[in-house]
Amino acid sequence: MESVIDILESKFGAKRDASAKWDACVVVPKEYLHNAVEFLKNDPSMQFDMLLDLAGIDYLTYPNHEGPRFAVSYAFKSMKNPGRRVRLKVLVSEADLKVPTLTDLYASANWLEREVYDQFGIVFEGHPDLRRILNHVEFVGHPLRKDYPAQKRQWLSTTDFLIPELEKRLEDKGYKVIQRSKEIMPVEEEYLEGSIRE
Amino acid sequence: MSNEAEKPNFITTSLDFLVNWGRTNSLWPFPYGTACCAIEFMSTEVGRYDLSRIGSEYVRFTPRQSDVLLVAGTISYKQAPILKRMYEQMAEPRWVIAMGACASSGGFYDCYCTVPGIDHIIPVDVYIGGCPSRPEAFFEAMFDLQKKIKDESYMKQRAERVKDQLEMIKAKTEQAKAEAREFAREKTAELKEFVTEKEQELVKKAQFWKE
Ligand code: SF4
Image (cartoon, rainbow over all chains, first blue to last red; front, side, top):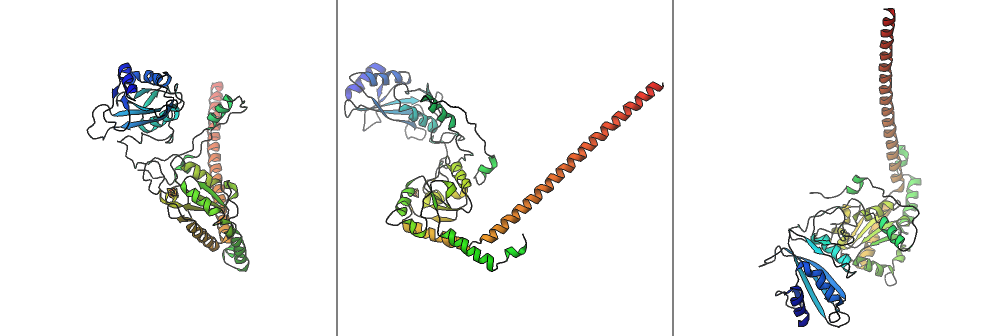
């Protein structure tokens, strides 16, 4: 385990995260993240071939914290060398909310990055389909940020229109779409009655 | 509708009795299960407790064929319009049961994503407490609902609805008439203007030729 950290430190200018007590965690500079992950995945001595999780962190109310406000943490696991795990972390400042995407290396990064974008507003550059995944389309703000009031509720007026996505998926599988469907907008007041609005 | 139909008499009361008897003993639920309470509903439905004993024989997974919308589970804001549409698709008569703390009040999810009780979206007839509600509580709720249905009067509802419809039709015809009158008035005014203009033009022309 130490060797992974040493190699990352020497190759990609990473630093050991002093606050991580239970696992191996390194802070990687943002510009080397993609290279470091590619190295971790493809190097025969590493072979971290599974992206377990990807999470955003907001340090706004964190005690004794210095440095950028946000961080994104990646957890990797190796299936070929059993028991090997490592966690990478990139620091994201509020002025520059951009992180390179990992979707070209790990397919599982797609939805995980969408979730972090949805909840924290961190933009993943190069992501093929960066939309909200948990909250609805009319949601304003990013709820897991510490300055979002946790009890602030937002009503949705209509369901998501997912038919074009379905048609696209069918077309990818080789089916032919004869007729495209159009969205029918429901009457607005009908769906908003009974909503609590402050 | 005349007042005759609203007064309880032998025919209406016996018809009410018949209709209510039929309705109470064949409540087909439509389970809208989104979370853990739906699992509890499954155990209510099968062998040991057996919901079919009170006539809820079939669990219908389509809103068109069911009488009771059974909301079992947490409803998030993303789901609220779907639930509303489901309710609207159900045919009358329809009733709603909110099963569990989540559906009744939002439960312990006091946050940005959970609807604090489905009564913000659709009308609810019976609430069941518990997290999740026990099958016994569910049966209690079904009995409550049956009692409620027995008190309803089919004929009265029908008379009221017909009255409402009549009033609506009357109001609509009134509106249409008023619109038509307004339209006619505007048109005649326009035509009059047009005619006077033409007349003046002709008069001017005539004067010109005279000169
Ligand atoms: S009331 Fe409890 S058991 Fe029922 S859906 Fe909510 S959390 Fe689950």
